[in-house]
Length: 428
Image (cartoon, rainbow, N blue to C red; front, side):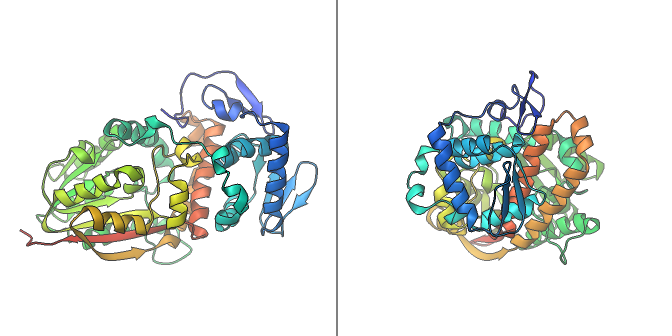
């Protein structure tokens, strides 16, 4: 269980930042920042201010001092705590400082987009070689072994179906849509999600009688649309909440005879299928298990079959830098996860499978708009989030997560791909 869980035993809230109470039982590392010596805080302050001085930002500290070239405003309410957290824990500390209310930004996405665009050179090269002093190693218990993967998936996707329903569109799709035009409109959100799904089903040539394996069910929209084409769908998930909702939706749609949703790890599946589809599942697999994941796609696919994969990606050099470090996203949102690069995906497919890359389509700008719509709706429905039992620290966490992700796509630090892999042989 990670700190994202909404309702562990409550303790006395601890005032932090601008007096925002933080429940120390739910959020111990936010309520009690790590110790950082005066020397480390001073050094961090000097490095941070030097980096900010040359960025198109306007960073205003509590004493009135302002640095930056101008642009989105960042207000640092508690500079001592802000620098102490960053000095002790790098970007984990930066995110926890936001959760604690020690800094804010009226245009959070704009500010984070500037930082994402300069991620590779924010820290001077000599200091980057000392990153091991503040970057934590990934916890061993977060490896995506079959048992570890169940815990990691549950900690995010089993938070609450009602929570996700508050900000997702009517299809309950939790991945990038494909919009007809920008800016994306909320009224066309569900249709844009269905357009994304139909592209994947078309790539995999899913039609009447297709035996389809879906790895990563979500809340069932892809399985329903495939079954609506006449396919026989087996969908795998590790989330009980998602399985229950997907099965209910299949019954309501009159498609229960064509959709099976199994609470099963992809490594445990033994069937043979004409097509395999997996949407933004690889990010939760973990680098050490990418060969196993792609071999499973290959082994489950019949000769002549097709795999359609949707994956978030990042530049290869940044992926290598992140591969062995513990990040804020891993600590609070997606434990055990790692976003791959296109180089890593294609090298793993080449070296560990008989599959061939037949097509790749990137559409990162569409993900930025998807995240904007999610974030706006999450913000608008804050009172309903609160009524579900999620406190203010959780809301700041998720606001930061959605804005941080949107900024990554707007800065082109992140991208999203749809792949088609084919397998030699004759289809049945």
